[in-house]
Image 1 (cartoon, rainbow, N blue to C red):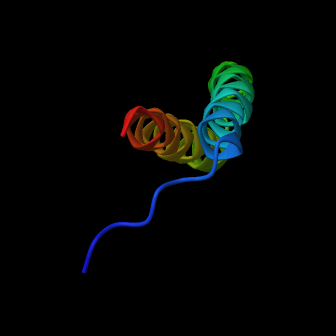
Image 2 (tube, rainbow, N blue to C red):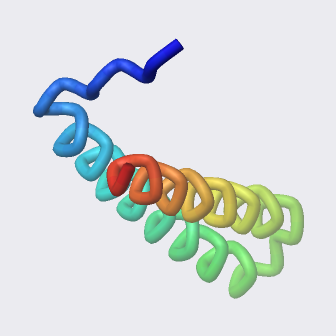
Length: 67
């Protein structure tokens, strides 16, 4: 079965998604920094996990937009 062609706006939407995810990753990194300075290990781990997941999501969105 042949692949359907993406609509023209799909590349823009995927890249916009990657930008939003990068902003979320920056917020997560800032939250991790602030919480580790405050000595809150649980909050630090949660912010670090959010940062890692959003960076992975942004990279996947960029890879998908290149197709």
